Image 1: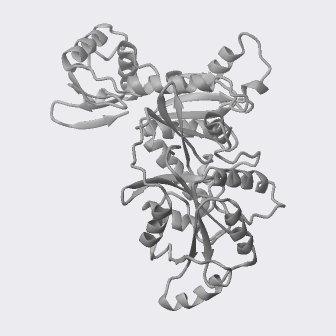
Image 2: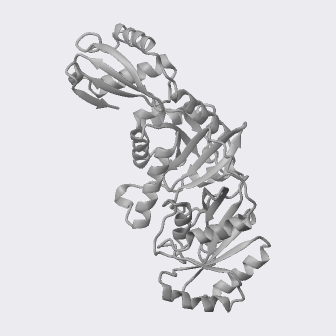
Image 3: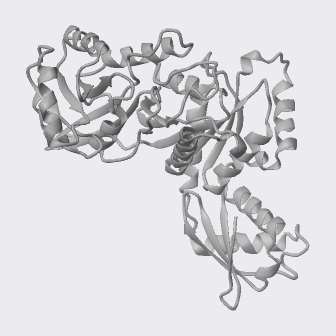
Length: 443
């Protein structure tokens, strides 16, 4: 989110269609929509343009949450904090008439001393417009009847919004790196996002699964714009039972694919679990650079050798972890979190490396002459190699025996190229092609 652009926050009761309206306004299905009340817990934001004006829409949780819920207080605090940063609010009411809590929301809108646009949702049919009289009885002057689901009067609503805001041309910096934070539920992902942002951008609770959507935030680091995305905790597929959780997992995988670097949060008090290994496998399938961040390190009793022992144990449990940078952090104490960003920038920069074909083939010749793999250079010969992509670096190798280029040989060549090209921690993809154009794709 660009903090230099006006922020328009959509507020209202639970289940009046705020997320549906948010998606209609931005033209994307970014917020999860479901008939289950209280689905939105975090502030979801997206920047759009309309008639030359640029601004950021924010979808907020329903403000009529029960005070009895353990999650209510932090959710409502985050929502009210968001209103304090807003330049305009869209107060969303619901056909056929105002509910008792709507009167409190109208009073809140008046007290905020910022412009507000009142919209009545679920005006799906012409005959529904007769119900507008019920809302004018609240003392409101200008009300926009809309149907977020049918996208009725969405352009009119945008026109009303832009008329109340100073026109500002969009001039956003492109993020230097896009980082997705993934991990098991309750591993500290939202706490890390908040630590970077400097305020409660995402709701934090001890209740696993609090974050259901992918939550973006932008911040500046040594003059560079960094985009970080907090994601829903990934659980075993057998534990994903509801539609809401399915959409949460889908959003998390989308966030991984959109990212340049993934920070995999591991709870130091639990160690690397089987679920963590599956999460790392998903990151590798997406071909992303990854940093393993061992969080809650402040809760571990330690001496000078504790971290090295812990790191060795992670690698013993999951051999692919040897390829990744591993760092201990405390998101709650903000320990070594800036080092995470430095690592992410470094990985992203090195993943863009391009090798000239003559240089690459000299390196491949040296790797074969090293004879550290009994097959390579003898039964299997690499005739020629060329780079076919970056981020991650992708190479095509032409060989006499593609059938013998098994997983262990592919890994050996990958590791060798990482070493000679300075790509430690950067995933390398290799595509094998034989003499008779028989293609085998290996990762």
